[in-house]
Length: 298
Image (cartoon, rainbow, N blue to C red):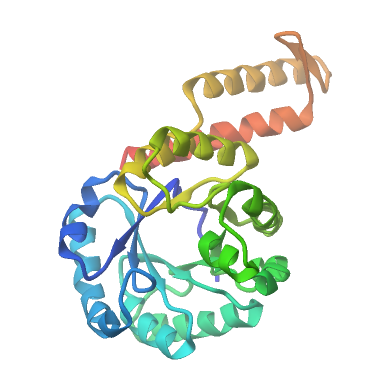
């Protein structure tokens, strides 16, 4: 299995797959990813009917939206198997695996998805995983979880469930340490660190939320989920390099080439010493800007 390059998922909008008024407008919201939900937003009695709606919802979004399509599944194995039967379809970019218990949990689901891909004539490994860690035990295995299967492309913390599991509140102070652990495990394994240094539950103060997104991007997170369309613009802007940052990065890379031609490994720019780590950061920022531009040109 040869994983594709990382997608650009600055914003992932949760949409209950069985609520028509949300589904009808999902493609208009500007989210990089639409996350069809079979988990928390679906009442237990409604889950069988929700599964039956997945295929039609995916087909509709493929016609109406430019967003990638993800499906969030349930954790109990009997539910997960039924969810995967409904969700492994052409047009589905990834499965959001909730409440990951450990690396073996992901490997088991990987095997199930691989069998469904083969049975349905889909590309092997084409459907990726976004793994959600939501309890302290699995968080202690974050590095192993991140490396469990090449199908995994992103790692995130389920903030509300995690706070509940430790008997705390999902405040920035409580979440800072586990969020950073997710960031470290994801980047060490070459995955996308997804999330914000807070919870996504409060969307009433968009100005405050915008600041949370800005801080999260500064930590190294590259995207996050939204439970309300109002959060999408803040995510798209906050997880994109600003024009000023792009211009500065271009100056750094150009100056580095000039310095290298003169046999120098470091140089001064705007009164600051620039060396290899800063150049590499500028190169990564420009690569990110190009990937976002390519996505928005689709």
